[in-house]
Picture 1 (cartoon, helix red, strand yellow):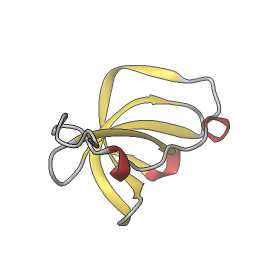
Picture 2: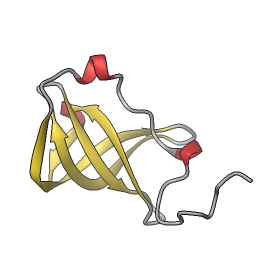
Picture 3: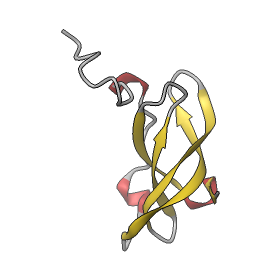
Length: 88
């Protein structure tokens, strides 16, 4: 069993974009008290870079953590470079 279908509201693991390595994310990590609406460029394994709607939940001087929704309404999260994120 692959586990697909167990959490239809979450992006399947094979489709998740890769996080930046924690060494690239750097620190210190600042958690946001409330998510901030953003758009972010995210790399999806089979589809390349896509601009997604989401919320920033944390950041460092170099990167941001974004919770996003894919085109099927499923939720995922990823660390991306800070310059890949813009506020909505």
